[in-house]
Image (cartoon, rainbow over all chains, first blue to last red; front, side, top):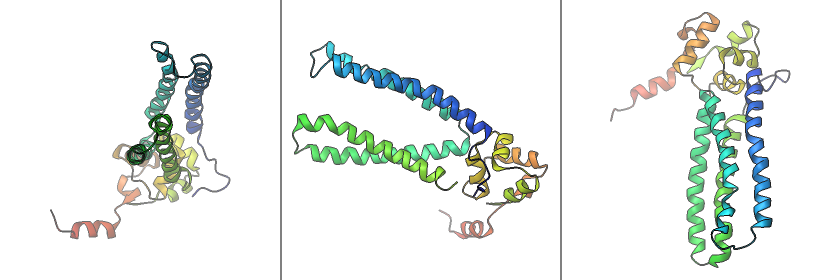
Length: 141
Length: 76
């Protein structure tokens, strides 16, 4: 345990965190704008090829993913271990959530259910990933 | 493994954050090492030994109970 006067982050931690924020938040800002713009201007159920415009938010999402991967590259050996465990838990939860959604989807209205089911899986996996990182690192140090 | 990191760090007058910066790791990693939640890789153990001017075995020692238990376990 650390004493209360001891800083939670070292100089190196702060530098890495600042760099991560600089790389992560711009793509997330673009993502929000693109999601809004496509929702407003593309509309519901457009025909092809206009429908492809709905994929535009994937571009800034990939840009944000690049920031996460670069951050992992800068992480030390313990942080990588924690992230690997958290991703493994997230993957497992995504598998179980997929099964649950799959079984529930067999008897649901397919149109309504297909709209929400990917987001249930996404949210469950992200929550599990974040919670595992929190338990393995933040809470106990 | 057990280790004397916390004592050595205190004797050197270093905070966890200062030690982390000298080792090029996060403060969280130093905390995990000190509390025995994480055993370092050989390169990191050598860095620690260099920093304190000691040998690796002067800082780390095997946890005899778990080492004995694993050596007593039947093979295969």
